Length: 87
Image (cartoon, rainbow, N blue to C red; front, side, top):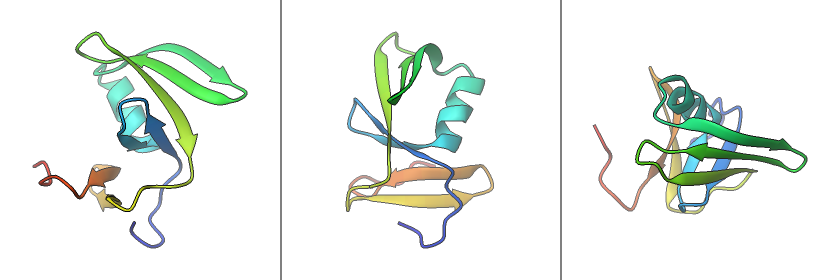
């Protein structure tokens, strides 16, 4: 994880992937994901993915050792270091 990275929230997906709040917002804004249900206590979000699947997002403060936060011109995102970085 990048030290002092400007991350306003992290989410763990039911698919085993991790997302920053920036990624979640971008996917919702571009309609790659569609909101289904948002629960506030405990905070959870259910979204429909572009392939019609459902994805449950729960807030987390911890990333696994294989995940890093990347900061670039598009914002912050979680990178899976076990795979090649997407371009």
